Length: 288
Ligand SMILES: C[S@@+](CC[C@H](N)C(=O)[O-])C[C@H]1O[C@@H](n2cnc3c(N)ncnc32)[C@H](O)[C@@H]1O
Image (cartoon, rainbow, N blue to C red; front, top):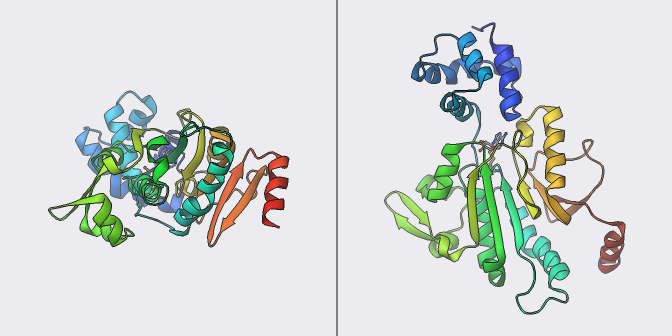
């Protein structure tokens, strides 16, 4: 079964979230939207489309977004990037920023987990910093954002079920950074760098201040091609010189942007943006 309003609903969702929903995925509308329609007294898909386009019923729009977004995540997803973070990305950042700085006088390390879902990604970053770069913990600012208000609320809570914890969290980190609760555990944020969680739509809102490192993983994959380009341009603009962009393992800048340097560390790949040639030369010499 299909509905005449589905193509226009798919377009409206693209404008709202960036997400690209192909006709063969329209069945998702039938699975996920009737509940929202019932809650808001909307009797047809055409009426739902009208409400989305009108844009005045924020509660309905939030529910539509919750229903259509995928929040799949886990601790230390694609774990090699976390080794790259503490063994290559941060040591290089230190090399650039500690030079000439007095004791503790270096600038803050600013990290953005864009599309952080329920928080496992920013907490994984934070735990790695606390474990391997303790001296940076008080000088690090992590901002973690997601379009889904429900996901951000869960991330702020920092409470996870045993099943969620079993997905990627090493036992020694569970012991060190969590307190056990009924059926799961609660993260202890006092041991970690500061993390500010907030709802943010990557398509319609401007990026926050400039960052040293951006994790923007497993979201561009779901975007329409034109909005994927816009997203990567936004990420590039949000990075400081020599800032690092980390994408998901199925995502790439190849064929989309040209002015970046692809870096590797073991199985991990990430992008260095806004890099002046002179730095490239210096780094090349260092590794020769
Ligand atoms: C598959 S999860 C990825 C979570 C995490 N980055 C990871 O790799 O494990 C994708 C997240 O992107 C968020 N998202 C989708 N569209 C978005 C948008 N336009 N702005 C911000 N977040 C968005 C979803 O709510 C979801 O939590």
